[in-house]
Length: 597
Image (cartoon, rainbow, N blue to C red; front, side, top):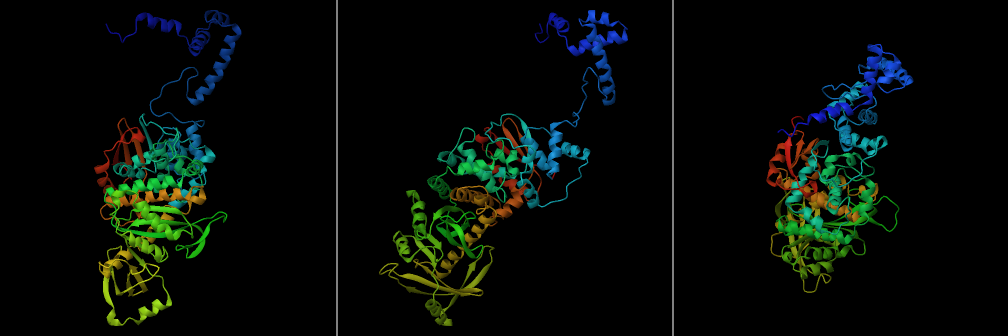
């Protein structure tokens, strides 16, 4: 017996008991107009009053006239194959038109509509706009497009959805300008950074847990967002939300509220855990470059001090920050924004305490390289007592300049030092030994005098008496790289911008900047020929991309639009792309090339 077929009684009951009012009216009007039955007869047969029969007849005539124009049936809807036509009253049509009036492009409109749950395509949006007389927008630069989104044009039409964690358990497809950003997730998973975040005491909530919160900050740091001053288009992008395990990224007010709950102790603990990963992974050499940078403050003066800004070549109201960077791979392992004039000389000792917080790494660090104003001679003596070698520049004075000028020509030798572009330059050097009671009684310092074309005479001092002068000069020359990285932090990672755009604690901001910088360094190390490139170039060549994200049962397929350098990125991803991401429903990621550019 086939249990899938309904019994005959059920079929009969359906037609006897199942009565729709529109069908009943259709039969009544058929009897009234086609069979020419009287209103009294129709009223008796269909259980109507006579006046109701005449009312139905009147309304039928009006609907019939209107439906004839529209090509519809007054009683029944006919199923038509193909996509349903969007009428003037469609919410999707109204939103598409409203967003275009704000000068948003079709891809931007598609991303916003995806975040609001509409199932549509760029082609359909384009057809809607064409049918309403909109022409194609002129070609605009990325800055111009971002400026439009920064003005909150979408929010004036319809507010952004509330950010929250979602299970990603339903099949769906959406567009995103942040698809390239997802290529950082295999790196994060491969080095266990997600586990470190979960072990920290950073804040979290039931709607946005600790991991999603930190990844939300990281998503903006890794993106080329010039400033967080407004709810930009990023809080409507489903791809950026997926990076953090959310439907969309939170709005700016959330970022301000979250950072206010973060303490300096949490940042230090997080940096210690990261430093342990870099050491265990062999990413740190035995030499660390140290430097200060001034993060401008644009609010009321308050208790902030004047600090020298090399980027602006003047002193300004700012927050003094210290950075420590590995001289070989460029990994930044330490940052501190609590530096004041009164304690800046002790920063170098605080860094050593930070670095040696894990006893297993006590013997790894051999050299500290910094400029003349970073610390005092007395602290150099303390560093020497710890068995650490230092290389620094001696502060200029008239007597030192006169001594360098008095060195005869035969007292100078030459050496070549390598530059960042693998080229080299020739410098001249001479050396001697000196002592200073502030450094320590019975202790000597090695002085190396250097000069060259377009290079003012300088004096390097060190407590290393074993390696050659050329090696010492080479080690110090790499310190200039940290200044380049600082300039990049100011520009690409907007280190001195978001703290005034939306109120973010600067120390937490610096910690997130360090993490974002290091992820770009790890990405560069995996890309043959790009190990020396900065974040801006890497973003433009590999990360900045538009595409589709398809959520399946086990795999999230990320379709990236074709770019000339994209195949190189995809070649490096399969080695580390077999991870499961618990914050994306435990799914794996599959990166593929889109069928079009």
